[in-house]
Image 1: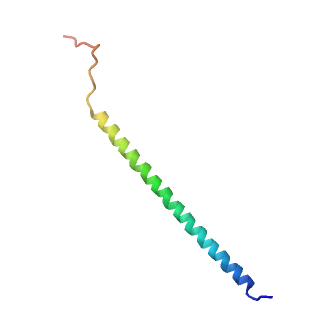
Image 2 (image 1 turned 30 degrees about the vertical axis):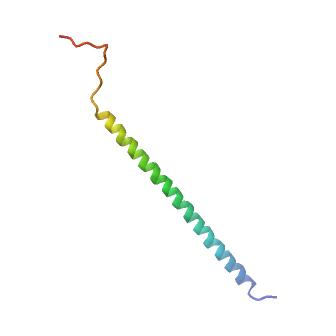
Image 3 (image 1 turned 180 degrees about the horizontal axis):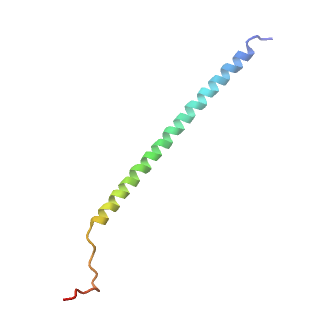
Amino acid sequence: MYQYTNEDVAFERLKDLQREMENSRMAGDSLRGAATLIRHLSARAWWLAGLAMRRPPRRSPGLKAID
């Protein structure tokens, strides 16, 4: 029987673990990118909403000033 069989299996398992870690790291990078995109879009929407709130209220044509 080949005496290093267990070492070969262990080495294959180590390579599999490294491959899984790299794949999860790449998946995490894409999720971080999506989170960054969502953060930028929400900040932009918040900014636009802030601009809309700074505008003076519009006068309604149905209301008349009391003299």
